Image (cartoon, rainbow, N blue to C red; front, side, top):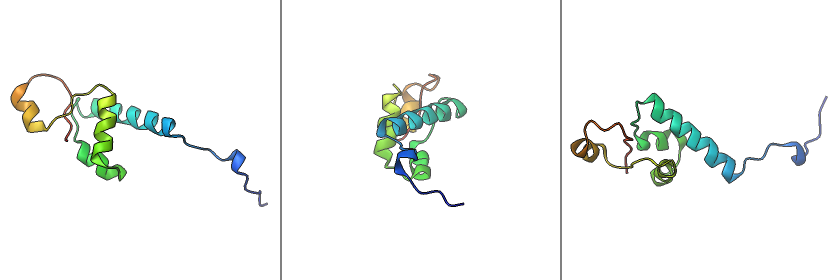
Length: 84
């Protein structure tokens, strides 16, 4: 049986829904990676620009910096390590 395609019944993902999903996923990544993650890897996996991924991490209130800079300034601080 073939059902007619009706766009009214198709799921539509809005920009807000996509942002919500990505930020929740990034929060889980941070938790899984002991609060430090490399945004260049995530950006490559998601085929997204690194700048966009960094922007979403910043919207979570994370500290965005090069890992080497972060380690030298606060080696024991449990914060977020992401790449610029």
